Length: 439
Picture: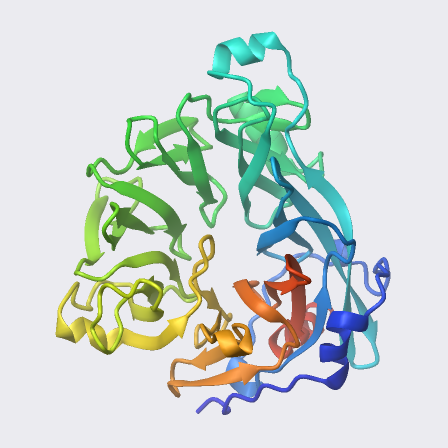
């Protein structure tokens, strides 16, 4: 049996939230980019899950909010979105590691700001956009797997919202291949891969990097589309008459889970065997309560989502969100009393852009509790033991929590009335680094 969960925060971790100097050390021991990519398999049952070294990413004061942190597959980069009033940018930081005694310390440095706010000429405006707004919104960021390339939604400072791709490394092989096969329109350092007068957004890349699923209003309603980058083909996946959004791939790339519904409530659907002759849509959850933002566990066995179901069965209390976890194979009932058996945690903070933050063991999840008196503290839940424990982060108004594929944590919290991004190491991530850099 796996070890009982133990959450230990060092005294310096809490202190670093406030007092850590804003220094960025470049990693030289070892240089992560020179380590060949290889599979590292850990038996997480052999380690106690500990969280430490909590750091604030952006120390520069200013009237802006940061949100939606996203790690690359190899944790070399962390991207998040920054709201600057009439402008939304994406900031990308390099996460460096340096060995100190028997552990690895984290440091970070900004390497890129993603923003399409230049003027690209009247021809572009006339051909592709209905109007010129002078406001630049760049958001809904997502990484390509095992790459420094990324995709995001932008109005390019001109008008309509489309999908763009770019890369931290301009010579990235994946970006080069996409440019050669699709010949997308360049805009500054980025490339437009959709050209519609209705919004395209919420793009997610398949685990193999060859396909993109996104939601679009091009048919007058929110539908899901599949873009095959290898073939250069576009396929409409849904046409239900409801709004379909927040798609997420299964870890093996065979299925897509998503939210669907209208103003009153939302349900959870799955598209099985995407892009094959056996493709079919399946209702996973459909009942009186509101259910949104599904995501897969890393092993693909579970799907978690936010729900307004509560033990009092009050469907009108929309502020009371909880966590439901069902089998991904569809064996759970789609409604009724039996479905309530898959309800795990109540009174949590629903993030508007993130699904559930799963640890790589597919056993623990991380979330913020809706406790105003404690300023929304972060908890971790053990789905096998069905127990939760508090993490003393030293931060307030926590949300937008994410966990990387190997256990690195990021979240946003409020400082002096403004949201900032934090990262934290874990024992899982430390063990991963030890194996990665082992002789």
